[in-house]
Length: 51
Image: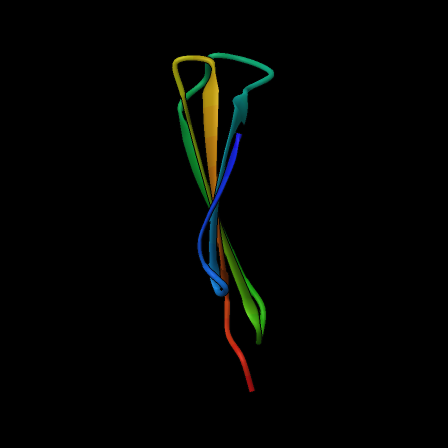
């Protein structure tokens, strides 16, 4: 399931490959991705930055 809250913020929920707990953060100049995984669920937060 994907929720687009604003044009620059999107949240995606999906089933994780395993039940391990982890937090991963990735940043580029225009995109930030945060991945939270717990209880066989994964939440991805995409934050876009404009010019």
